[in-house]
Length: 523
Image 1 (spheres, one colour):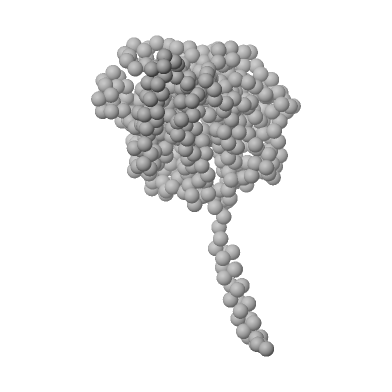
Image 2 (cartoon, helix red, strand yellow):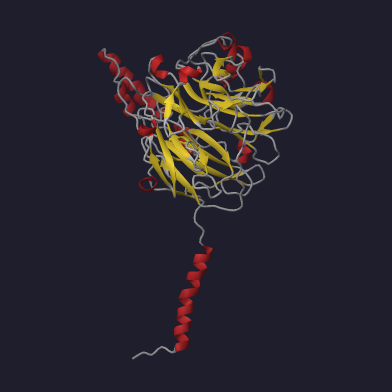
């Protein structure tokens, strides 16, 4: 019989124990982990129902998805979540603590129909409780497109009162932003809208001076609790060629007054409005930026180099891989690009732009140098310090339910279906055509700030490479542990709720604003 001496027993024990200890000491969880909907209670899914009348060929923004906003609506110190749905009802989830959320939509009086797009929480009536403003769009009549304002009743219920406040706008709305543009102490509102008609041949100067109440952006001034459309007087363009998909509010020229950056899809350019401090704005894009994104989607502002100045990110739809760049329809041909410039449009390039503030009212696009210019069909870029190192990182949502711009589909399938229907003297079966579009799920993207005006892609190492069709997103500290968690609204899939496993030092601030702006928006 083999006998093991005590010395060798100890040796074998240490041989097993030491590597185990070292392995445990060296293991670091990924920066984020995707939480289980069964555990969090957040089961929201923005499910679409396509038919012959309701599809991307009938309404070009059919796959743009919904939004999500975060805030403490019941003043219990925990951050709650509100999701918007297109075909499904919006949903409010109250944070119960310990990473569990309760769906209180019906009890709170927030069940709603219509094609909801963006949403924002703000204390509209200045009572110290967050209200919820919901934008709507889609192929509905004006009555069913009116935006909704849910006023917090301070008893876990809400009352829809948009008409009372003058904010029941029936435009094709994408999102809204509340801010005090005239610095009179109360919250005003910028409403971002979009057209449903593309113009192929037009005089940009002529159309830009026209106002389309359904497509044009609007500025609402708060006049003692009732909002007044002051767009014309304030110098805000509201033309029929506007396809607004994102807005960012910040003091971009560092003069103490909040300015407005709004993006536009297709031919129309982005606008940068500098606040004149007298109730009016001046559009300065041609002066401030050498070029912008072309198919501009979402936007966000931040300070990527910690110099105290507001920088800006705009998402576009340039694929990261060479294969998808060749597969999908690309930027304008040079003659079309030059013609647009000759007609008065600004220089626009199909890629994400990261505009670095030069401290003199102008910006430089460093997106390519920074390594964030190509993230595919992107929607919501968020600039935030995700790892608590004191530098703002970048998160970008991606995905489009069907590759509408797939070149093979456009050149072969689409044209063939048109020819077949024409030869038979029939109309094209739109739904059949839609279902032949390729559908490819894509992961979102997250980039770590390298502190030198460059970013490193951390999508895989931070465990955020789950594929999907993602649209709206928000960051918030959902568990009050001092780091920022992420929430994403998906098409035809359960929302992503990412828990941040970081840590490090942090400070918590509560802003106590003046009457009219109790939450200190703009501080």
